Length: 178
Image 1 (cartoon, rainbow, N blue to C red):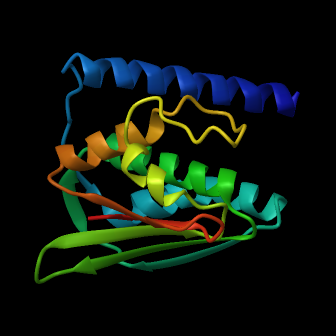
Image 2 (image 1 turned 90 degrees about the vertical axis):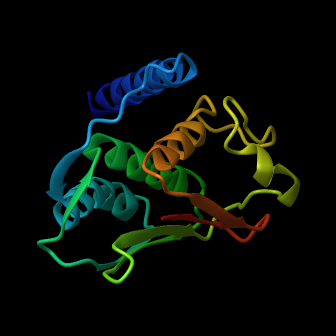
């Protein structure tokens, strides 16, 4: 029963990503900014991945240097989608460890998130392609449609942020969102 539930959730996530992709493609995706507590949203989202990491014997280190009462004005759902996609990818491709960090810079009134894994990495020749819709590195047979990183980039840029990737084949990847 748990396997069926997990597969249904994966299918629902894929359908929602395809719907979001279509909205972006048709310029119908809107950002709904509200005020919410950043720390609470991040920790709640990360908690959803702890069990999976533990069950796969993956070290999941978290370093959150954000005031617990810091309110931000942005699209909470977009932040959750960004985190969910990057964490899902990290779990999918890592060997044994993931490190999540979030730092708040009060002087610049911005936060920086980083998700780093020790996984298979991305070939240098493909790094410029990973944010294109439906792009996938052919040699790996993993589930997914290749639209998650496209959506992540769109959501980050919709908030006037940027996403940077540092990766080497065989040495893992780090995604930094500002």
